[in-house]
Length: 76
Image (cartoon, rainbow, N blue to C red; front, side):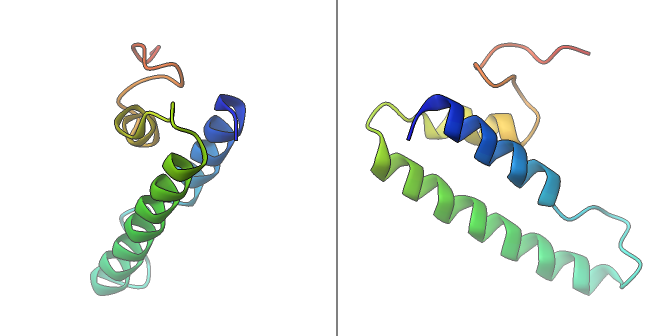
């Protein structure tokens, strides 16, 4: 996999993150969030196994909105 693939996968994950408030209740939200975090971590492990240059910390930070796709500051 290439950097382009990793960014596209991260963009998809960002769109799927459960948002609060959840009309189905807090317990549903927390369960959905834990499931999403588990999937994100499993995918990070997979990406790391596919490319030795994969930067797990930067990828997770990008998904969290803490940096841009290249690791730089987020434009506001």
